[in-house]
Length: 201
Length: 201
DNA sequence: TTTTGACCTTGAAACTAAAAAAGTCAAAAA
DNA sequence: TTTTTGACTTTTTTAGTTTCAAGGTCAAAA
Image (cartoon, rainbow over all chains, first blue to last red):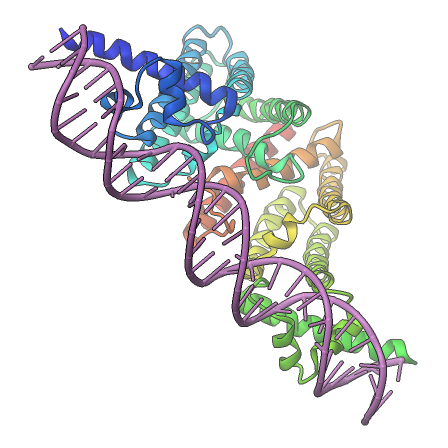
């Protein structure tokens, strides 16, 4: 069966690409370099991916999948809804630290219909995870709210927004140093604390 | 006395510049155009302002002053702390709608030591206003919190952050259409609602 | 003290050429 | 038949250059 071997090669390409991207950034990585790493020809890459953008997208989708699965695991195994929300903040930090060098922002800036749709799906998935956690919190009597979905969206957006409003200037590459990162995480947790209090009221 | 007349001319220049900036954007406005509007020579402008950036800065400081004074008035006349916080959201919207065409972002991107310091001062002033409102809320028994300054900073940053996290993409010029603007204001008020509940707990 | 015309200087577009990387394809290999 | 490849074309990026509008200066005038 051809598809098995094909999927395997596809995966090898994704791994090689991810390595290059994390090390040198997506924009500085050429198709030839990836091919050389794999000891194959550039033309082979084009047998598996229609173009460079498709490769970028596939890499991004792959790591996004890992991110969401980690979150979903957190949500599934939760003991306390509040604790799950705190843990997700740390999870997100880990993810960003790990993959910030990819220059995802470049890919994410792409505003084609396809990509806007993918972004929307990803946002929705994150909202849903939070909705489930908040629902669990309501069910257990930990929280008190009527519209979990609305609350979840608001919480995610308010938390993410701090990433932009806490730094005193937004760098072009949207990158931030460790110190700033920690300051943001700290603020996110402070906000979550008040937010949770608000949900208990 | 020369300073009086000088200040008057300086003000006329600022008004003319503001008009041009709001109509065509700061980057599309030339010193010659401003001079022509005032029926004076470009060289005259340079008698009052050392360079174009100084003019930009002076215009920005002028409208910022009006913005802060409106906020401070709101804070001074407050009946309910919660209501004051809601009103400030509307005040901010009004301000942004009015001056978004200036292309302030360009000026704000300037990261010289001087400008970073000015930005810091402005942020601090906004924090202070919020701190005072929250302190008033605590004093009146409306809120229950131990660190008003920390809460104020968090509230401002969380609110402002929504400006970036609610839109599905951040435009280069940081501009947003009316529809998006309304969505953001709505979110800001929702957040404020929960935030205030959290402060009452 | 303030204004100005004439002048100098600078920086952002607008081209250009060269290089590098993206992308294609017919033929070979598996 | 599926996969791979070298040799090829096309597109994009970069670096160098020119040009011109806009920024900025100054000595003289008002």
